[in-house]
Structures are given as structure tokens and as C-alpha cells.
Image (cartoon, rainbow, N blue to C red):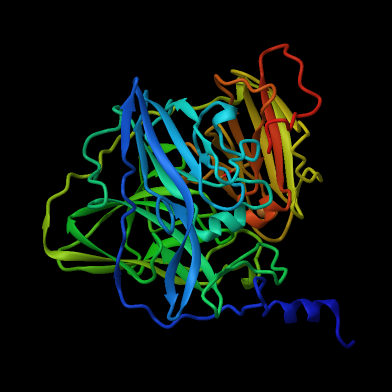
Length: 486
Ligand code: C2O
Ligand code: CU
């Protein structure tokens, strides 16, 4: 008996890193009107839409007398919404005004590997990086965040993240689309706030990483949104380091799921809840009556077929965003019955099957090695990947560059909310997900793309691998050169 190492873990669990602060439960916050991240300014230069982002530190005011050190793009926390249309060339001039190296990854974007912003495109302190690419995918809610190897969790947790909305002339008429009015970005993050105000990372040894008691939506607590029309579209982004949210309305009202990670579904899916693991997005449209107030909440998460201990956040509930309808509401059109046409990728067309086993912060028993090529795929081909979580706690799986489709979960047809394009998928414990991917356009012999768990502690600790997209017959590099990494 006596003092086991488990006991020690539990003890240190109450002392977070960063000067051993304790997580505190903040006093109730007054209702705060939801801040809307501004749409980033841009200018068109020689046919290219140019944006500017500056990563910098700032402070937030969460604990009276103890400013919270934060970071953001063009401001103290989070960043502006980048917005561009399919077919446009974009360039983003990124200035790193932090005192350390970072990177900016375009999560969900189809783009050349050198523009991807992953661990192989570091931006040194004080320097700038100007990736440029063609927007070549359907309308979607994407996002951007740092991806420096081993430091992603800390940078995102400080506030470095923003939305990237892709527009497409093919999107149907009739969806709420007045940005910030009836088409609203909702960036959800839970935070561990320490008694000196700082954002903490859990060092207690919780397998999934940092689960905090404080919920921020677009950077504020206790957010509310004045609604002036009968229907409102929410673009939900789980930008938390580890927590899976299960979004639902307090009165369990039905809403229409219209889009998943990579864009619109073929038709709206009526739901009363939608589960999003870190990095997943969902666009929903909800009806509201004049004068109504309704709370968007995160109810306890059904973590899957296998019971997951509450320690992994499954039982936590949060109020997320209160919708407050005006006494009189402008009419909204009804949600179109057909939203998009999605080409189904066919298993018959797949040239191969790869298996990925996620367990204990490794993929296929390997730790991330930035110099190693883990998988070689051929440009233009379709593949089936079988992804399995063999742990009793959650993981998820994100693939750079492509949007994929879900073929089956444990051999069964996936639910309708997984019927569209995805770039990140929640992996319930001990289940097998069969996904199908097509690798298009961009070859990458010397610069790899990533696949990884998007629980940021896991990602930082090496639950990540690298793939290159090669021409048919092209020989693979034996090692990835790190010359570009400094
Ligand atoms: Cu959202 Cu590899 O990242
Ligand atoms: Cu994981």
C-alpha cells in the first residue's frame, strides 16, 4: 500500500504546470454579446487576393487583477476570418511577432505541401512567410492554427486560431449568409484558467490532455447573440485542445446540419445534437421564434460503444451560446432541400488499403519523425484507409490536403452526419473507421503532408505520421530533408 505512483499522479494533478498554479473556477460572468471575428481585410494584387496576419501576444481580462497572457492574429486572441472564393488565388503574408518559432496551417485546405503550414514550414520569430495557392474546393468552413512540432497545443491554447471560409458560386441560394448577423462563426474552446489568470495545460497525466472548466466562445465567457431573423446559421468549430463537445439546444429542438468539415452535405440532415471532436466543424441552421431565448449547450458526450471514464470529459456539460430573438423577426427562406452534389468515391476505384492503428500516442507503433516518410501515395489515385483506435479513450484522425468520405464504422454504414466531406474524424474507442481518399494534383516528393490525432497533446507527443504524394513511378526520398526547417 502506501504512496503509489498513482497517488502521486493524483496529487500532482492538482498542481498545473506554469509556476504550479491551480485551475480555478471563475465567478459567473455577466452575459456578453458574442464578439464576431472581423473578416480579414484583403487587397487584390496582380490577380491574387492578399491577406496579412501577424501572430502576436496580448492579454485578456478573465481574473480581476491578473491579466491572462494570450496570443492571437492581428489582435490579442484568435484571429480574423479569412474569406475567399473558389477559383481565386490567395496569398497570406504572415508575420511572426512572437518571440519564438511558430507556423500557420490551413486546416482542411487542398493546397501544395510547401504552402500547408505544417511542421515543415516554420516561421521564425521576427520573420515573415508568404504562402500562395489556388482555392480549389467547394464552399466550406475551414480554419487556421499553428503547427510547430511539439508546440501546437501551447500555441493554440494561447489563442492562435481563426476561421477560413471558402465561398463557392455553386452553393445554393437561400442559406443564411449575412456574416455576423445570421451566419455566425462560433469558435468553442474550454480552458484551464490558473489562479494567476494564465491559461494552463494539464500536467496531471490525463490521457486525453487538457480539459478545462472555463468555456470561451469567440474568446468570451457567457456569450449571447441577438437574433433578428427566423433562421440562423452557426458555423461551429471545436478549437479545443482535447475536449469533444456534443452540441444540442437546451430544449432539444431540432436543427438542420447543412455542412461538415469539407463543405455542404447533399441535403440537410435533421438532428438534435452534433458531436464534434477537436478540429471538426459543423454548419447548422436553427429556427427561432420572436422573443425566444434558447441556449446552445454541450451536453455530456456519448463517447461511443465502450464506456469512457468521466475523467475524459464525457460527463461535463456547458452552456455555450444563448440565442436571444428580437420581438419581431425578419423572414428567412427555408433551407434548400438540395445543398450540393457530392461525387461518391468508389471502393472499386481504390488502388490499395492502408491500416492505421492509434494507440498510446503512436500511430502504427511509431512516434513522429520529421525526417521519415511513413506512407507513399500516388497522385490522382484513390485509397481506402482503415483507422482504428485501440485505446479505451478518445482519439481522432486528421489528414492534410484531402477531404475524405467515410465508408463504414465497424463494417456498418456511417450515420448521415458523416455522409459528406470530412478531414477529421472522431475515433470512438475500439472501433474501426474505413475512409476513402483521393490524392489530387499536388505532388510532394521532398515535402510531406501530415496525418495525425488532433487531440493536441497526442499530436505534440508524436501521434503523427507523414505521407508524400508522388508521380506514378517516381522514387521516394529515403529521408525528408530538414534543410528548410530552421
Ligand atoms: Cu488542424 Cu495537422 O492540423
Ligand atoms: Cu489521440
